[in-house]
Image (cartoon, rainbow, N blue to C red; front, side, top):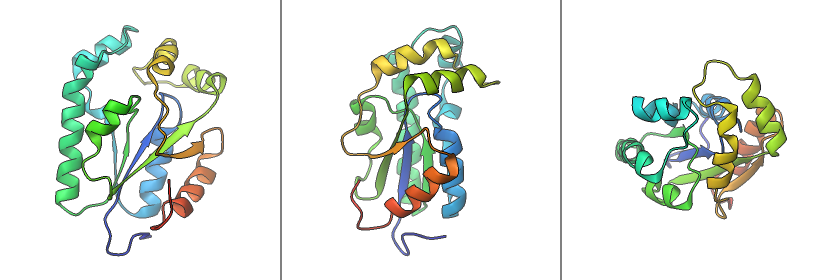
Length: 173
């Protein structure tokens, strides 16, 4: 399914850990027929070790990660490819760093009550981000003003259907 005809777009699905970025992002990419990437896959072993040990990452820790993600976005846009990227992008400065071409990038913010996110994190298996890190993520979160906001307590398929409508050209975030 192509929403943009000849236009290119990169959708960045953001929010705290456990908000559903990966699930929604994968389903959205499948619906759009484009690539999906998860920013978690680009963290260094050192950053993963820190998070596993329940040590919040600093801006300095994140800088090399953000540089790699920006390069991914630059290369994607230069190649004329569409992409859905799941990325926490908690701070405004991170989002600014990842904005290569604002006309071709759309931000989606998945928001949900802390209690729901905490339940999801406790139930999640095989991920390095422990539930104990949620409060540090919420403390770092600077809610975006220019993103499409989606209620992450909804069913993932419902969220994707909403996004497919909202991301059509000419719609405002």
